[in-house]
Image (cartoon, rainbow, N blue to C red; front, top):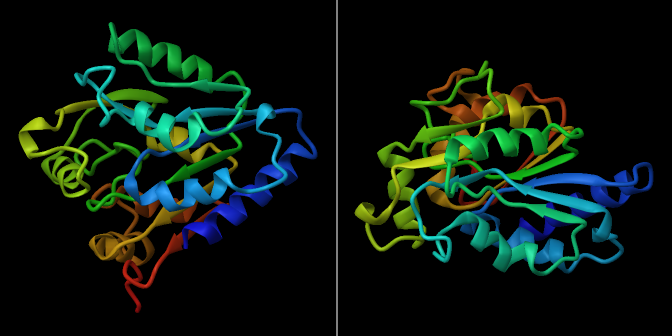
Length: 232
């Protein structure tokens, strides 16, 4: 599944670079994305020096050196492996509010071509959990309170030793900001995501499952495996 997604993403990047001087991409940081990113880093024929990279969310309150920080995870899995034109990391320190303005400005310098994302156990996209997701959010980037299901997922993914270690707040791209990208590639493996995928595909369009809004995008491809497939 990860390799199939990477093949499609690589082909899309190559095609877009044939018509544009620079491509702008947003990456999710999560173990669910690791196989796809590894395959993407090995894909031939991509001029990464013409690709600008962003990431979609970051914890508030973690040490800059913490391995659990999403920017550091992405450094390990993709940012340090490819010769990007630029990498724009969300850096909450020292002022998260100022960083929101700064990152919004960076995102809005030009259209976002591609977003590589996942779906959380509670149906979140980025850190837009059901209690805070807003399909009509006027903001591009905001501070959110993480719900307990989301925080427990970080423990279950072995990113933190226990729930107490998981931050309560994060900076995230909002739902409308994600949906304004030209193409979305959504990679969602694992049995723990099966219920979220069912609601994404078949449930009502509502913030109880934020990922359900992906059905409204004109070019969103969902990649699931036999474990996350609700129809398997």
